[in-house]
Length: 116
Length: 130
Image (cartoon, chains in turn yellow, green):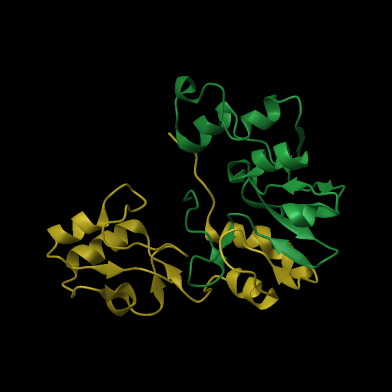
């Protein structure tokens, strides 16, 4: 059994000391050079949203008759997300190892794009 | 990079051991010292990814060439270390995926912790989930 990783909140907490520093430049390993403002935006999770637990997501998906490409925000309301920073697209593997695409096909072909 | 290195004293600093990319060729061409967080041990692989000890034997092969070699100059570093070249290491996603702060230039190098895959700089969704 693999150990649990870290949450987005824990990562934000770890990065908080950087915001106390006079950062002028951010040099991502993946992405173009950017600035302090991007760092500030990137280290803020949407604090006013409540993560949706996986069982609730499943119940929502199974109860939803959406249209292809419908965003989860439309289904759940803009104030809910599926885990902070967690993105699931059709066919991708969800955190419990389920293929969401397959699950959705079984539920009538609804395609959800879950994002912050 | 090679051209720029000709009149400097270059070093290679990896934010994670799996980011070695062309480090070996740079070491061979320029003889640069390499600063790198420690690769996952067998115990790390068991704990993080649920491998068996048999599967994880020997630990991660990341930078094995560097640590085993005689010509290379490896320097393992960890969270909280201040490298002699003016770089400070902060904890990122993992104990060996670090975020670097270069005070002299006011630069942050966020490793695999903050990434921009076309949307914006954001926390990496490859996180091992809690």
